[in-house]
Image 1 (cartoon, helix red, strand yellow):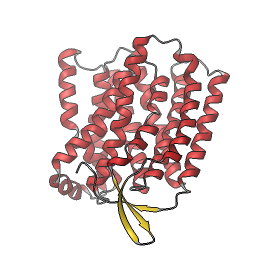
Image 2 (cartoon, helix red, strand yellow; image 1 turned 90 degrees about the vertical axis):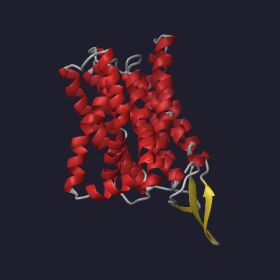
Image 3 (cartoon, rainbow, N blue to C red; image 1 turned 90 degrees about the horizontal axis):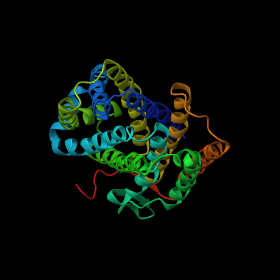
Image 4 (cartoon, rainbow, N blue to C red; image 1 turned 180 degrees about the vertical axis):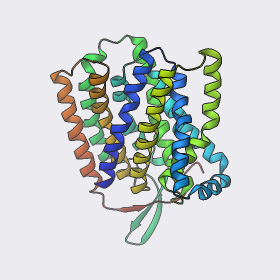
Length: 325
């Protein structure tokens, strides 16, 4: 249960992303700066943490060995994850983005065949491709049903353009984030702690953010002071605290695709936290009885998902190999 609890705390801090990104968009800020500033601000915080733990040298040596993989998977896991989320904030409210983001519950499960697992059998350890945890996905469908109920009434008020531009990029992000995270776990192979890995991925994705920032400078100009401050808050709450917590939770179940899917399912609570945040900070409409029924389904789905993840018959240990490596 420890990874599940850590995942819930991560969901709480991740929810600040959806609320603050929507607030910045409503104030006239560009999604380009909302995305890139977060990762620029993350560097000093993470650098101080890793330096205080005297782990910088190990990180540097690890990144030097496989710079290409660090760049590719970090750009996917961070760049193609967060840039689309910020882009969507310009076309849809935070609650809808947070709700759509929960498709990552299924996206993460569908990625299992891209990785290898070591399964302990009666004849000893055996290597096999990861399998999609269909039992866990069944529980995920309950979560998604609850999310649909929560947003059904509000979503009917949106135009087709808002739905398309607000949802499609989030679906892309829902695959990019778990893919980049899992691939980097393979690359690191348990040799780095979560602080080192997040700092390394942030540094490795800098070319992506620098290019995006240059595009923003020449198209929309520099960000406002308010957007800069709010982006720094997102960097601390979501970029540092939430990311470190989530990566720590996934590290605890690394190599076990079923339990990994359960940890990723805890992120469904971002919907509840984001909804409450928008009610308090942005004066959003209070949820209807249908929405509250959806929240109950989300919680029930989480509990069932967590329960089913502990009923597997095989013990799975991590292996440092993937189909694409």
